[in-house]
Image 1 (tube, rainbow, N blue to C red):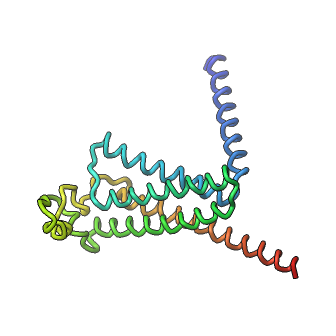
Image 2: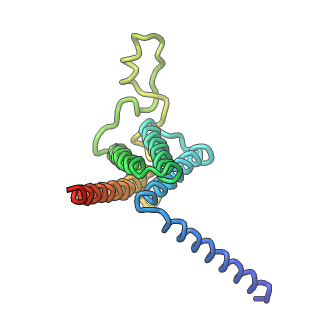
Image 3: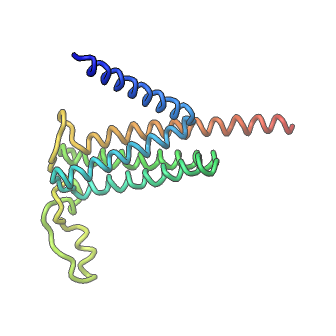
Length: 207
């Protein structure tokens, strides 16, 4: 290895150290609730980007349940963004606490959808009729109700188009959503306990 290579490696190590140091400093300036909101925003963003890349680059067409799970992460993205705006721009701890509590509910729904889809993939229970491949068109309003029980042109929800280490995308979404639920619920409970302590201390001070 030449002196130039040694210098380049040292510079790269220094740059990485500076980056991780700056990130650590940035994150420690956030409260637990703010870190939960930021982490949820980053995680849902990454999962949505990954899902769209699998579709547009990998050619994997999402089924109906896949699209439902995406909607949950879009909702989480919006709630997390609102919470960060409340926390960092408006300085509202109450708004941030409400947002992280709402996020916990969103991720509970997301985990439920992923659990249901995973069970359909493994054949533990049937998926909705609309999940089956094929189906007809709605030509008038009288056909609308019947069409809800007919199959769509999307792939069957039972078909697993991609697995890694034996786990499908729905399975990974289940793990991620459950973890994010635990984090955001923990932040919500922490905020609740903090609010109760403040209320108790305020009550003692005025009595």
